[in-house]
Image 1: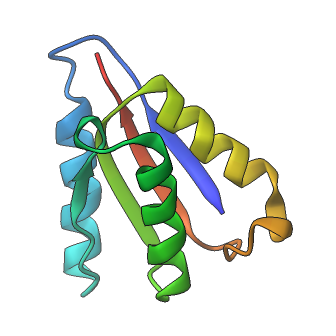
Image 2 (image 1 turned 90 degrees about the horizontal axis):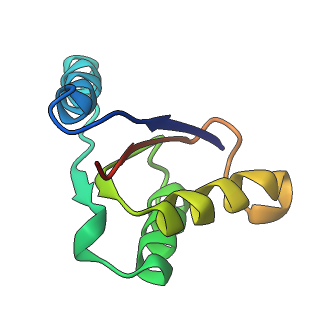
Length: 97
């Protein structure tokens, strides 16, 4: 699992970057919806990452993530193969401004 965190102050184009990733994936025939982090609890957020990975998806996109959600995703990444998530699963997160 690989985690990419997009950071910056408000109005710096973080969400635009995430949408560009989504558009590039769509060009490749890959549907990857954007989850809004602030609309879910951290445990639910982590469960969504795991569920997408276990379903065979290769990408997880999330906007407006809290620092707790980002830390939880990084902790999951640090578990490596013990997390049960494939190493080629990519998580793209936008940190809340």
